[in-house]
Amino acid sequence: MQNLDWSNLAFNYSKTNAAIISRYVDGAWTAPVASRDFEMPFNLYAGVFHYANSCFEGLKAFRGVDGKVRLFRPDENAKRLQRSGAHLDMAAPSEALFLEMCLMCVRENLDFLPPYGFNASMYLRPVLIGCNPQLGIASSKEVLFAVLGSPVGTYSGAAGLTPGTAVLARNYDRAAPNGTGSYKIAANYATSLHPYNMAHRQGYRELLFLDPATKTKIDEFGSSNFLAIKGNTYVTPLSDSVLPSITNKSLQTVAADFGMQVEKRPVPVEELAEMDEVNACGTAVVITPICSVDDKPALESTEVTKTYCFGSPEHCGPVSEKLYRRIRGIQDGTEEDIHNWCVFL
Ligand code: PLP
Ligand code: COI
Image (tube, rainbow, N blue to C red; front, side):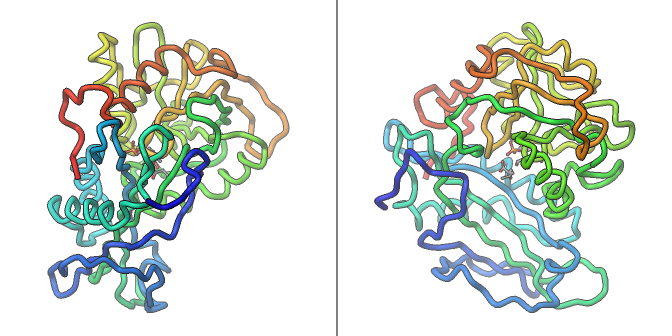
C-alpha cells in the first residue's frame, strides 16, 4: 500500500504504477498491456490533436468495508463509450474488453486504491484517442484505448456534501441543439473551459447550462447532471443535449426504492424557485449540494438579476443526504446492493 495522505486526496491526476493500453489497428484490438510509461509518442498529425477525435469515460473503484474491491456499474460506462465512439465513427472496445481493462487497471494499481473509511476511491478514466496521422477532417481509423486510474477524494476539494454555489450560463452553451451534448466526447469539455474558468474566478463552484435551443429550460452542470428535490419528488431534466449520467440513473432507482416520485421532464428555469434541494450528480461529484444559483444577464456581468436559494448554505438537504448515503453505502459494501450494480475485482 502506498503511503499517501488518504484523507486529503484531491481530484487530481497521480502517476500510478501502470496505464492499460490496447490499440485498434487493421480492424482489431490488440491484447491489453500494462504500460509503466505514461508518456507516449504520437504523430503530431493525429486526429485527436486537431479535430478532437476523442471520447472518454469516468467510473470509480472502491475498497469496501469487507475488504472487497467494487467497480460501480462498469457495464454502463462500456455501453456509453461505444455510443460516443459510434458518434465519432471511431472503433470502441467491446463491453468484455472494456471490463477486462478496467479490472486490470485496478489490479495493477491496487496499492493506490484508497482504504475504506476515507471517502476516497480510485477514479478510472478510460479514453479513446484517434491516432493515425491525417490532414483532412476525418474519423480516426487507428485508435488507442487507455484505462488510467488515479486515487481521488472529493471533486471540489471540500468535505463531501459541503454545499457550493452555481451560476447560470446565459450567454454560453456547452452543446448545440442537435449537437453532441449527450455524448461523452472531448469536444464538449473544450467548449465549457472558458465560461467555467470565468465562473470559478467569480467564486462559483458550478456552472449551470440551459437548453441551447430555447435557453428557457435547465440542462446540466458543466461537470454533472442536475437533480432537484421538490416535496417527495425527484426532478431531473429530460433533454437531448444532456449527458445520460449513470449516477443520475442510479439515484432515480434509489429514489423510487425510497418511495419517491421520479420525474424526468423539461425543467423551466423559473421552477428553481420551487425546488427544496438542488444537487449536481455524477461520478466525480457524487452528489454535491448546490445552495444557490445566480442568474445574470451575462457571465461577464457583475449584475445579479436573481438568486435562487435552496436550504442551508452549511448543510446538505435531508433527502439528498439520504440518497447520497444509500449510493455511497452500496459502493462501500455497507448497504445491500439489491440491483447488482457492483462488479467485484
Ligand atoms: N454530465 C457531464 C457533463 C459529465 O461530465 C458527467 C460526468 O461523467 C456527468 C454528467 C455525470 O455522468 P456519470 O454519472 O455517468 O458520471
Ligand atoms: C466524471 O464525473 O466522471 C466526469 O467525467 C466529470 C469530469 C468533470 C471529471
